[in-house]
Image 1: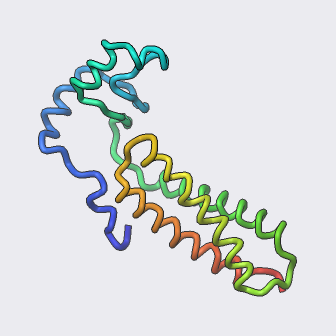
Image 2: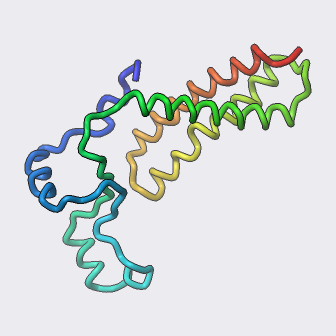
Length: 160
């Protein structure tokens, strides 16, 4: 959030109010949706489904609950997520390196593991879900920054 490079990741729709007014009466419950959605791989070849794709719009939709954003809950979950990444990094590094290993070796093992945890899994969103490559690259850079902090902490606190 600090460098503000995510500020434009999700631009505002030009006709946002019209879209909201059109879908509000549908009372879509919170969840993840694909529109249009085929019920099977066979149905994806159906001419009627193909026509729906051509007619559009084609979208993935995440519907959130109608409530104010809560940073508190998200920050708690983020802390837990970072702790889990740290545990995996500790496990891999601890299995690979004995106590007394030099800082740079610990930094590399812990950093690579943390980077994979923070970043690599995000790449599939560009592959499968058409997320902008620009957004994915920025999230990958974020993951690299988190991984460097994780690696530095492990290198600093590694048993001598």
